[in-house]
Image 1: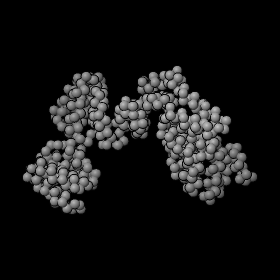
Image 2: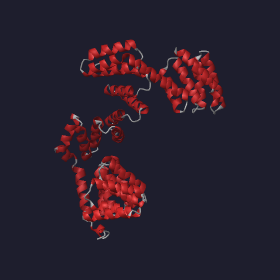
Image 3: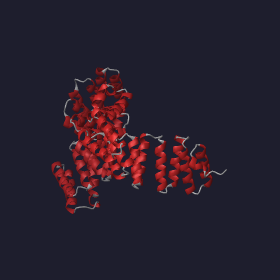
Image 4: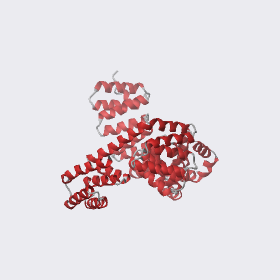
Length: 479
């Protein structure tokens, strides 16, 4: 049945081989490949398609036809990879084949769904032996159902001393469904556990390539890089994981460990606390350690540097404070606190917004959950006249703290400078809703309403601003 299907597809692609513009030698090689495949000389067919693709890598017809030959010789992994590549290039035939494969898998699953679900339920009930029996029965009926192999692998993995059987089952799952991100992820988890780190890293990356918003593989990569001392790469992957799943306690815990290793104990404590709230017992323990004497002794050096620089700052010795902080960075190059204080000195004391932005940028790269630092950088961008960047940073603040009235009001101010009055008024309205007692927000809304030629609205906002004790507004109110 499958050979007949492939033969029909080959015939159809032969008819359209020259419909695609491209290298004429590559087109000739495509026709040679189709001819060889029609004669069942598959090695020569693959060679012809390989040469065609080498000459014209963007030739979707060649990639698609090579996939068909791989499929015919039962190399499903290579076949699906080519079908996906050709589909991404816009080849409708390749996309149709992938859809047919998905549909076939769904039909197969329907036949044994009761057995698969039974196996999952038995596994959750702690009856692994009975779960294995149920899933084996499912595989007897549908021996090439990838989902069943995945469930089998998961059951064996829970037994802990059956990792080899779990890996064998995952290999089968991937053989029958090469575009199976969950199977690659689980194989990566098991491989990491038995210290096959290179394979684990490869499998996590493959899972991400198949499903870009898959949080767990990013966390897995973070664990690998953290264990190898690559803190920057680890933190980047943990943050990516949390971007897609903010409640992934393993990523929060891992990021906490990274911060702790970099002696950023405040950042570590925040991550551990979040993970603890999600019932991660290890994170609860770490948070408590940092809260107690461990944090005091570990943070002593950085805290001392910050204290000394702060004293210099209050004494008006701004450049001395910055020089001291630069020296402290040699000992703690990933210290959020040092970059943050340096940014504040540049911006608030020296009015040097450019250097302030540079330091705030370092700070938010270390601690991207800091709404206040994004706010500071937004203010510095505004001072530089970089209004789009400022709006972006205020928006980041609102992602972290959706009801931050100050961020809404300051973003409204920037949008007013951009003459985006409708957006500005919407932000002021949201700020007023979040903080209805702040007269300054009514005053800002009133000024925008005036610019929009809405005198009645402006009058109402001025009146409310004055009623909330914002004196500059009172002079605009009719008595």
